[in-house]
Length: 209
Image (cartoon, rainbow, N blue to C red):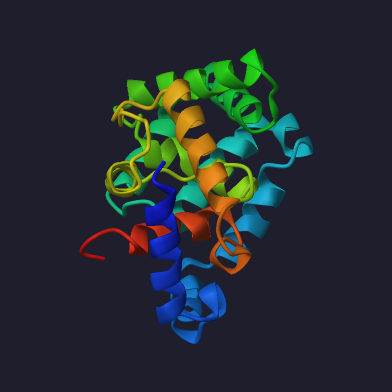
């Protein structure tokens, strides 16, 4: 990681927005994403106890993705239709894979991630945005939302020792997440009220942004 470039990006950002994400201009942008509302809704929809009802989990997955400003409008109906086309057994498997992705430990969490990707791949929907959006809302300080254009830009701009993979894999996700958490720990906290906000700062620091 290029620490000098990260410090430069931090200084430039704070010169434009001294209040960080509390700056009025950025606060207005943040309101459009409704992050607090989405975090609250997802936390309720995908609590540990909620997974006792797999059918409700599937509908809540559809609802959260439909309301997310971070997912393409073109992906939302395809995602909805694919999840509703699954058999009851497949829906149960998908719900369980999400539970493992969120709350599993060790190999169980990895298996949950991979199973979820496999189920979405069957509908040609194994995309980083759809795989990472719900964890981003449920665990905003631990998980990371991956948007391909931003991820590729961050890897290049901050010289991360990573090779972007368009097909979601646990290994890449884990490595990228670790880099983001490390970088977040090295900047002023007002730039990083959540991982999503910190990734927004990184995106705004890329050339041409």
